[in-house]
Length: 296
Image: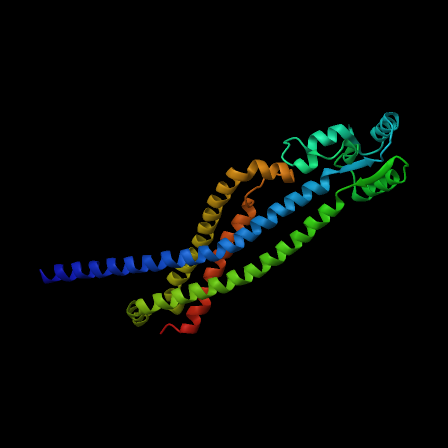
């Protein structure tokens, strides 16, 4: 009867220890997920900025604004000349009245509605093929600006340059956040390893007494830390995915209309790299922490 009671007591203590360790593991994973969410969010912004930049750099668009007083014949001749120009895909003539209707489609701005038709210059919307280079686009724009009937030419290159600048800033922010995440992972997993080692000190001492090597004793801790790091990254991706789905469901149409590109989530290679980074950081932190603790 006594041996049965002892066995039951050991099972109860084991269950309590396992439940306590589970709570610690869940808290660790949540802490790591919060850190990884910051990194994943910055990578998400950088990814979509890069997509918008690439889309606009390949768009090959230009707007040729005509001077006041340009006759319909002159506008038509210029349209036909552009249609025969290399790399030009399509050309559309937008008259002054059409431009006014497009701007005032919803009649929401009374100040704009009061402006005369002359305030909305006629223009030619030029679409280029994807083979056009930035040099070819700029050369064509220079030739058009030299024509007497052309007021100015907008190639949207400055917009692309601004996006590139924003992309560079996003990459810098991602690198800084990666350093912060690294510090957070090292701190959280290091603290977890110290707590687990303290709780399992008696088990470790028994294993050492029966001849277990340091590598054998460290292995479970390293495996746990690796799983924690990977689970934290996965949890971060899941949380960010839910938030991304909510935001995209509400603003997807507006963003597509504004930027010409549908927002996209992190590509699977980046997501997989984040999970791998979490696992590697967890394993490396555990190994370093346990070596400093000297399991004896």
